Length: 77
Image 1 (cartoon, one colour):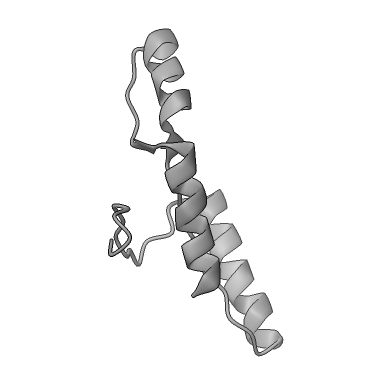
Image 2 (cartoon, rainbow, N blue to C red):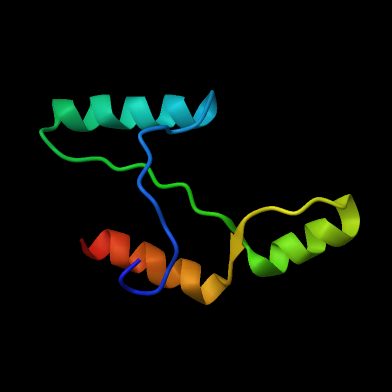
């Protein structure tokens, strides 16, 4: 948020595949005495505009440059 990118912390990884990946990552890193983080990122704005035209649905999105900056900030910390 300090970098001007809307985000929030959640204790919910999602369902099915996301939960599987998250908890297996935590378990694996616990065995290696490391750390793990699971991050959901939204679709790109460009992709969502395509979805809106084809599927008549709207999803949360951010521009690709902003998504790249967010991932870089996460990795840096």
